[in-house]
Length: 421
Image (cartoon, rainbow, N blue to C red; front, side, top):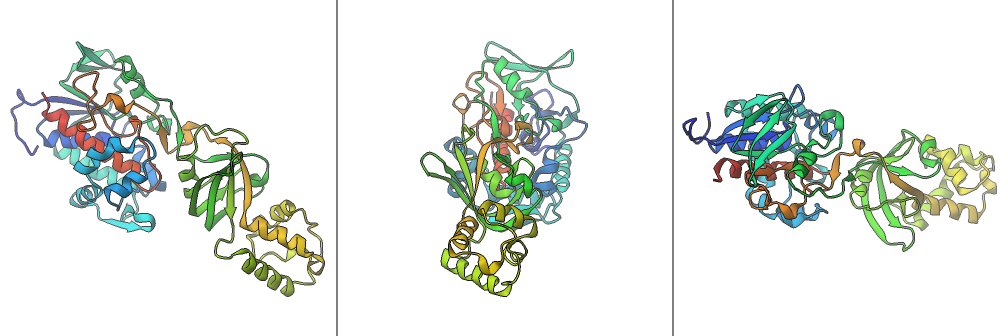
């Protein structure tokens, strides 16, 4: 049952294309506003990408106010001002609690379901869709139908289906196996919309050399991570937290966040710097090393660093310092010890690129927001066409911000599609 009852003859017919976070929320809102809603999802189940977000735990929003939220949106943040004013992070939390999904807040104000199961979030959204009378069709929409600058339906297979409004929620081009293959960009472009340059965001970084590969699989916690521009020394990004070395370079929460700050990444332009002992200044660290050296004074250097470094890092570290690994501890010079301190405080890793777009969490770029009304998410070019979620040229850092954007823009689009003439 919808919250606003209309006769079937009077109800606006709304198509929602894409059954992810934005699509399901838009469908629920449009149905609650009295529309007759059909949700098209090309996969055999809803929320395929949503099920794997947050490593399957679903970081569905961030418990911060609007201004702090906007500071975590590097691309077109002001476009989201109205959306976040209408549907805040508090609204998202209340919404899911009311749907029977208890929530918890963790480090960095990240909000998760208490169950740590993304599937619970998807199930709650799907139940709400069905409760509101949303018709769910597992069919692919191939194109939008429009004439005289107004949408009038969609084509699915060979069938043309009439609708009064269409909400495009097809996501970006990341994780294409979940159905996010850029179909929505193509359909919007066919109607004259501009799609800005698409590239990966929140994506692992590719490093030069073999250093990272030699430590493949090693995870570090509580390290300071920054990225600087090599030519100028300008610090582009800095964070504290976790990262992991891989066969190609670096990944992990701090690395993914850093990627959102990097544009036109090219070999030699950026350098990652890791402070492996951020709790100690250089003087304190030197004292710590001298203490370890006294403890292991009769050992070779390679066998005396187990208290200081993870085992997998010792050999690459000693090689990087340029010290003979079989050198006896009592023979290590003050200058060599200084090199060790400098390397521990600033492990330098040259960067040369991003991993492919299909490995990114989100897509940077999308529908040019200058062609979209921020108060309703309606197209300025085609009446009756609305956008929500990742298809728009807005993206944010990790921490639940991108899903909140999906929910907030979907609420505006769903409400407007159901009520606008």
